[in-house]
Length: 162
Image (tube, rainbow, N blue to C red; front, side):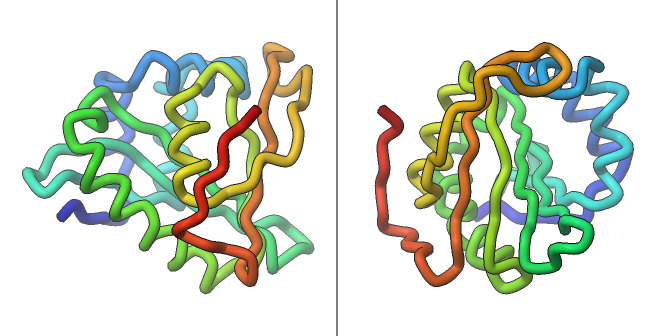
């Protein structure tokens, strides 16, 4: 079973050299900057995800929204190693989402519409897709808004984006 540790800037730098291309593109589309500039700063409020073999497979976090303490902005970014460890990652993901729901009744964010692996993962975790935002982020690309509310969260629910 994989495990989480408090992320460090070193974890972020290591991850950048193994990022999935779709995740690299999503960071650039959202921020207009390469992950090497963005991820080290995010690491202070994130968890580093490791496989059972000790390989860094990604970073994840859930950030509070100022003035809205019940809302958490959930995010994840993964490496190419993630595919090799997808079963343990999917199992651990459900537990992690349940843990985040203990802190925040409402979890939400937007994902790059091109990042189909993330969208499938979010659907598998029971998130609902709310709408497509045609122009979002620094590059003005389509992003999919998603959310999960604690009382409606069903880890067994499987939804497919049309």
